[in-house]
Length: 219
Image 1 (tube, helix red, strand yellow):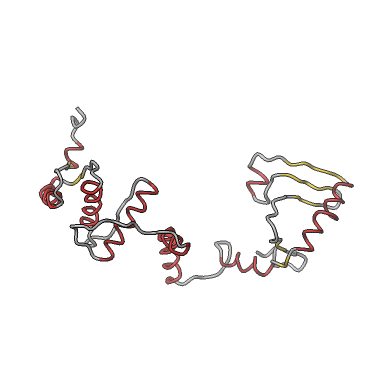
Image 2: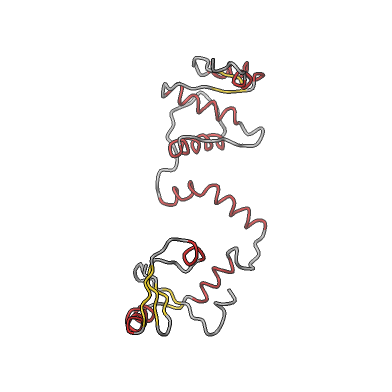
């Protein structure tokens, strides 16, 4: 940041088209190649660069670089603002701003789907499981994750209805889609889950964690 703030440093942005060329231009030579101006690009990556002297360096500077430089716009202040707001800067954020940022990162996929107009929610059939609105939303998001990642972890706090959310997911797979399912639970919850599965008019498919941990389980 201090380097960019110097009076003898200029930064411009060419945004008329995608400019992908990389050249490091000095008075009497030019380096043209694949290396980005990053620690990895300059020191670690396997790159391919060509060094040209005198005439080619002059052409690259006067014909190629100057053309794009003149068409580019000043970007120095904008870049400094971006850097100050990043982890490299000194800008301080309130706890509320950090909380909102964390929420956004957690919900980013859903937010982007909604903003882009894409269908972000599952259309699920009528259910026997009576859920609160926030639980229905959790079920729909769970199915969205299942569709995309083929797996989902529901990790709500105690008392927010993970059992009912799981029951609704089981209903969808076991009853409506006629798919096989298995509920792995602590042994003391077997009776409760037996009743919940029976309520869905499904065959019991329960396995306790204790049974799963037995040495002869796979025999």
